[in-house]
Image (cartoon, rainbow, N blue to C red; front, side, top):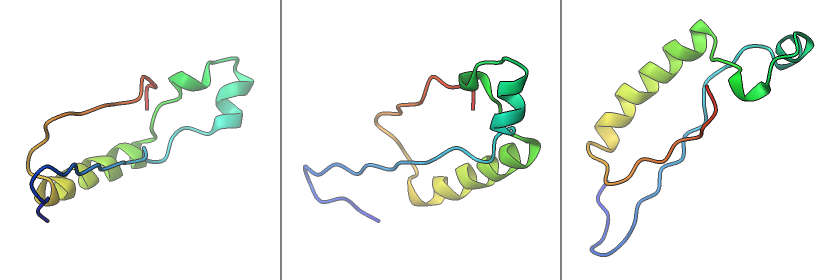
Length: 68
């Protein structure tokens, strides 16, 4: 994939599976702190490795302030 001169390529990635929202909320914890599950961490690691082949370098990386 190559971008035309002067163009911008934007890649948006959603987080992987996270801890159950309702269970987390029942314990009174803030949803912003809800972590990925083990499966979620594994999936995102695999996604990051695959993404590296499509987007080998980045100029800017913006992330969510949420734990996951």
